[in-house]
Length: 80
Image (cartoon, rainbow, N blue to C red; front, side):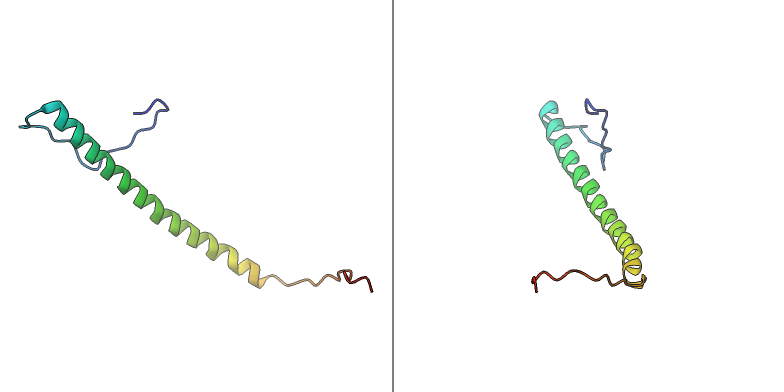
């Protein structure tokens, strides 16, 4: 858990039984699991973001194309 209270669940447990050089192996395995966990969370976030973006576009576009268009006279910029 971070100082800000953030917690990232690991995708797998860190297995250390039967290892030589316990602390070093534990750190290496923890780093590997941490990277896999962050990659998994990032992948899921990108997929959810794409779905939400698609839903927002689907919701917004019909309103843009089905509302009646109003034509407003604009002054001429040519000065003549």
